[in-house]
Amino acid sequence: MTNGMDGVDMNQLAQMKQLEEMKRAVLSRILTKEAFERLSRIRSVNPTLANQVDIYLLQIYQTGKVTDPITDEKLKDILKLLSEKKDFKIKRK
Image (cartoon, rainbow, N blue to C red):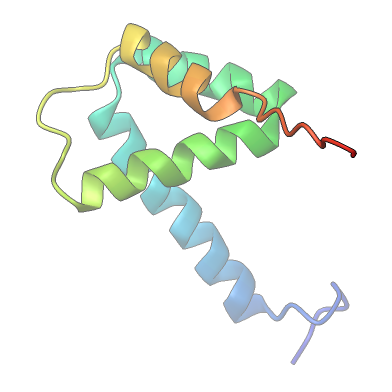
């Protein structure tokens, strides 16, 4: 049964919402308050970058590499790493 939202049924919507809440809970646990707030601000201006950071943070959390809370400074380093523009130079001969 769909509700007219491009074939997304209510169960899928509920699952997506639940996953978002779980993700937010994990992030709030591994980030300091300042880092969590910074990520929230980034999400409002650059959702793509915020999603990349979310995925990265969740991956390092799942692999057990997060031993201390991630501070605002560490988050800035992660943001620099993920937002660096990859320069591809094409040499023509």
